[in-house]
Length: 82
Image (cartoon, rainbow, N blue to C red; front, side):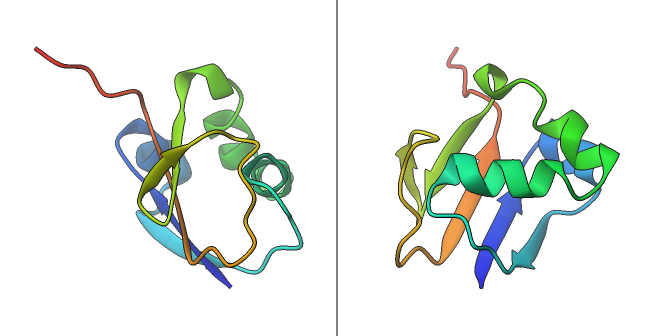
């Protein structure tokens, strides 16, 4: 089981702040593919990965990052400074 966290508009589209997911995926991209097939709200939230960032166990990473041993995956929009 992996804790999946959603922030900002990703949370709004999916309708949940977090959930536990049983996955067979070996990478973040594989997890996203599994989530997309769940319901349309997931497909919409993950339709444009260039507008998303991901962290595995609170470390910013890429979608090709491995999930082996991961406990948490978080999805959020790019952060802007000001």
